[in-house]
Image 1 (cartoon, rainbow, N blue to C red):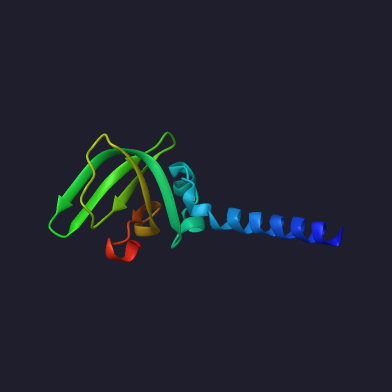
Image 2 (tube, rainbow, N blue to C red; image 1 turned 90 degrees about the vertical axis):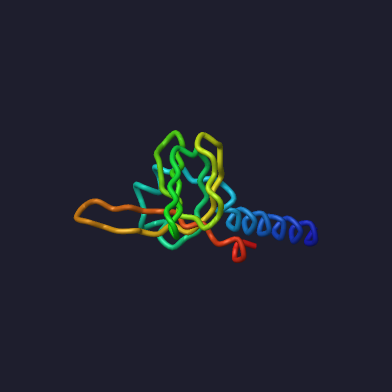
Length: 116
């Protein structure tokens, strides 16, 4: 009887640990990030959507990702994705700049070497 209870308790604890550790495996709606940037600042986030625009000039490369809730800028060192393609991006949320009440928050993708 006691062994069964211990197995159940251990199973429940393991399930809770797995759920807590898998937060970055599920895509966060972009609107949720944009509405609450302080909650995500410096944290790893994952978004899924369509690439709507790309930009590359010497050392800066970025692209825009849009889901059904909003659009966000992704800064990258990787090759740029094709416009119109579906993509899932994982990176760190940062505030690029703030001017008055206007803010630009971006997702910074990790370099290829550090992404392992």
